[in-house]
Image (tube, rainbow, N blue to C red):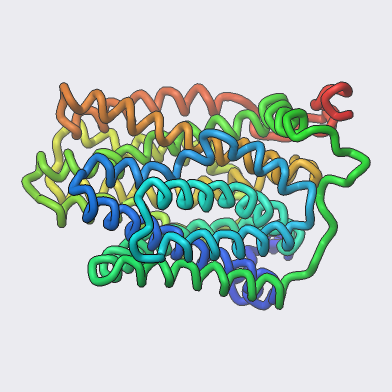
Length: 418
């Protein structure tokens, strides 16, 4: 039996955090993520306190999805025209000002919502620039490890941000908003101090128009066999495992669990992602993780099919946690394979396509299953929805998971590339 080579051995977290630039980008991202969720909780509470309307509060919360569903891919394409570090710092400073204005006591709700939406518009270019920057900092297995670790911490930041936002906003919502503004200032400082200034990924000679450049991102992702398959797998799996979170309130009511049960159900999937990302990812070599993409794509929705049998709360939490663990292994492996065939100059645009597709898939799944749960029990809807997901993933993963011989950039038509 041959010994594994250095490339076969998984990278370690110690080696990952030895990279100063990664630590800075990672910490800046955590600050932004925590601040975002803290802001969402605070603004939703402010609107509810002033209007007494649960619908208005929910609509305010849903406003955060709107940028990605409208001009998000366009703004992500714009990020490629400028150095990634500059884009991230500019977005942080602008969001610091906008959230600071929301924190002023007495700001009318319409103005507050406009400021919140404007701040949300800066999320796509920030995340696109971060996505383009990461492969320049992390190489080899460090990239997949970084993706896995970021995904884990993102889910933890989601839980911490919501919890802290609820606690602080319950005392003084404006203080929570000011804390959010401070997180953006801290993020900008770290990026300016510790991250190198690199040239824009899209040179001036290759620029055309934002609409054409955005279209090139869609052409590339859905024209490349491997990237198209990975995109469909990620969109599909996300649209199935997100359903317990979207229907947590009605599922908890069926279990007679109340708000505490709802909170546990919503936290179960992020907890599974955290466990899988921190533990299981480190036990598997890169090559094994890539070979597991197909079975994990099927396993993620399959773990939720037993909901058809109306399990008790403990069973529900176990199923949701298991789906999160499957996701934590699938996403880093799929994204690592995706970036191997993605040309450097298309990274931010491809990120815009993928993020927009994720938002659309998750939002659409929640709306459809929410409508179905008006006529059927949440457990039945979730189990049946994910059973259909198993069949869909079997079809989606039937496609080859190897890079074709055709150069990736050649899949963008000449008239598009000019």
